[in-house]
Image (cartoon, rainbow, N blue to C red; front, side, top):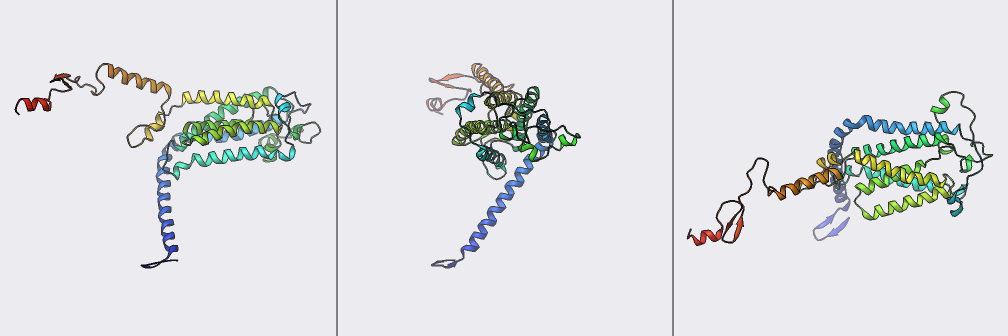
Length: 334
């Protein structure tokens, strides 16, 4: 409790009222945002469910290619020559960095439900992310099934009991993927890095819709550091990381051209009605050309079907309509 001139003020009571008021505001914010997101989810739930289910199909493919893996001598790699090997006991570092990026992005994608700053719809954001992930993972599956390289990771080297699997006894041995051990100790799914697919998709998405410039800069630095950690941990060859960098960016460029931000910007506007999200380049150029055309024709302020403005000169001043200026009224003695 706190003493004052007016008597005794119970801080606990004031704190309780404050918490109750803020909780009510937060709940109202969540319910309002849920009401906005629910119709979007109903429109796109099939693709979102497909994107989530495809993560399992991607895991099954990685499990299947493990049966084709044949351990052998580690290939010559420029990254292995430059970066010192971290060792088996420090292989968790890259996983910790990846987990931090994944956890941060997941929480940030749902921040419109809590904070008033809003630049995207969560459903539309994940719709786009899943589209990039699915296309990139399809390319990855085709790549590692086309050519199986001897795994450089410790559990994939010659002499390791997990380097080569005996033929599956039934289809369930492949479908069940022996989670989580089958995922952690997988081999053969090298080209290209799955960790870098997720990280680059998340970093690019925050670059597009995030508001903090310093976080964007740190995110790209973390992506580069994770690339080095993956190579130093001998989880992938350098080529796996390099291919991931340009493949994911090219896929994201293609998806961005197919998915425009018009639908998002129509729903999310600031007080003046201007969109907070940028339009795609084609729509923006079209809008600029229309405005320039109207300006050249003198119809920038005229609506459709309106007569062009009447430009007249009144005592050295130009007015749009035919109404007299103040100087005319004074001279005419009105």
